[in-house]
Amino acid sequence: MALRPVSVTQLNEYISRVLSTDPLLGNISVIGEISNLKYHSSGHVYFSMIDEGSKVNCFLPASYAKSLAYQLGDGLEIVVKGYINVYKKGGAYTLFVRSIEVSGDGSLAAAFQLMKDKLEQEGLFDPAYKKPIPLFPHKLGIVTSDTGAAVQDMLKIIKSRTNLVDIFVFPVQVQGQGAAEDIAAMVDRINAEYPDMDTLIVGRGGGSMEDLWAFNEEIVARAIFRSRIPVVSAVGHEVDFTISDFVADKRAETPTAAAEMTVPDSAELERQLDILLEQLTSRLNSKVEYQKLKAESCLKDIKRTLDSRLAEQRHALEKFLLILEENKPEKILEKGYAMVEDMEGNVISSIETFHEGGRYQIRLQDGRVFFTINTLKKEGDSL
Image (tube, rainbow, N blue to C red; front, side, top):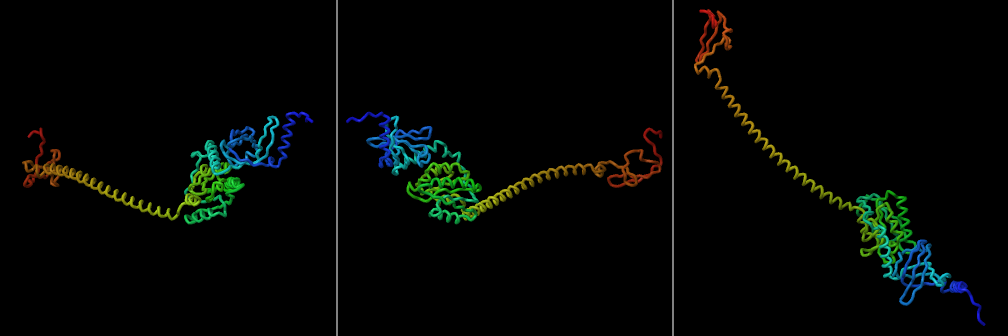
């Protein structure tokens, strides 16, 4: 007996009910590579999963897409968990995704590169945003696990270098589910509650790529980027690089390197100060010696100038004395001249000074002649 025909919609609805009640297809895990990835304006994500021989269409709701720890991209190998359902209008079945994990180290590296490229394009790695790390911090915060060896190593090194900084350890989960959210929330909390913190060290000790993955997640990168407090990223070993390293203000190769980088070595500073003091003293002594030699040279120049001027003045004085000597009254008398003086020795240069009955003297080269004026006649008077 032939079955009654059903509509296309009824067929798709039936298939949908069958698929939704199948215990395997209702909670299935599938591995494959992402292909034809598309982000919708609604926040939903559409893509295909492919392998060597086939593909399946996938749908990731916006609510799940927001919580992704990885940046998706074509070629990334993933493991998805979800259920199969039928898109009734299109008549095609779709894998509705509940969770996504990156599969294998190679795919983790691909996910790392995708996230790095995304944040770099947004400018989160731009050197223009890097804040300087204070040379002499007063308060230093460490965001890491409080049970790991890394925090003990950092504390030991910091205390061996200086006792002038207050250290605050902010314990967080550094790996596993929820670690990234814990780290990001702590960085935000410190900025809000401890605005006077000088520097933050954010990191952990070494481990596998999966162990370090929390420091590759976008939520941690953005928390570090918006931190007003300078951040030093200190994750793993020298060969390990995380997204946190690129977005932080400074990368330290290891947690111990971060400890050395963020606080000064008091003993080394004292040694450097001693060297600087010795150099300064030497330079000052050299400067003083130079100025002393310069002053002596100037004094010699001054002495030569003064001696020259004194010699000139001496010559002028001798010349003047010679003129005075030549013009002494005694010299004039030697030439046959005579001088008339009163009895007090005052030279008489005018006849008006004479008066009758006055006594006077004539001074000659070899003596004096005294005389008295009986009769005084001036020029023009008749005899």
